[in-house]
Image (cartoon, rainbow, N blue to C red; front, top):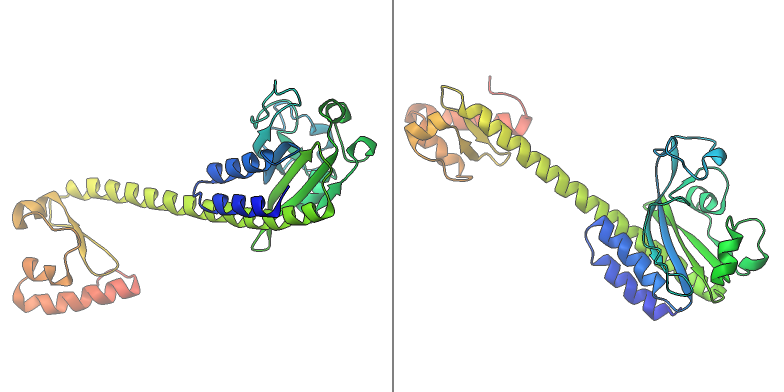
Length: 272
């Protein structure tokens, strides 16, 4: 595992804008590193599979929150199995309750197990580790803006050195920022889509009104005139200037109406 490769991977991850793409790029990039058998990311989320056969349900002290498997990449030693699914019997959810992923994802403590075959405390499926020749486990919290988002881990068939563990720590910090940015981008896109949907619904409503009605933007421009206004004044151009009022009011009233509209928009209050 080389620092330069992790830096290159961090740059690649930062260029993604969708959460799913960011997460996939992280685990696929880590799984491509020499010796890495499996790379996974769990993100904190609400308890949602408690009545659907969660493998670790009996260890769950609080069903309100757990770690959700969000991305996985790797393959078996003989290349007959690909571990890219985030569904399945094992570890789809990790309860908040004391195992190594919980310590990382809740306490924010990084963990390095350099001799997995001798480990008796952390490895839940030692038979799988023996079969796959797993030598080391490395896990880091994903922390952004002081918030623990989840956990990033690798299982390696080669020993993970302290230096490599430190490089992974720095990469995890960059990965967490990329995840946060992608989530913010998606939230913005969803908000815009909702706003457009609501605007369209409002247009449909005012189109039915038997009077002249207009939609106004925060910059003081009209963005839409309903059907009755279009029949009388003609189509309203998209976002014309405030002087649009000159077209629809008497010259003696235009100045007062402009002033009233500007005050209304500035205060967020209706025109009285």
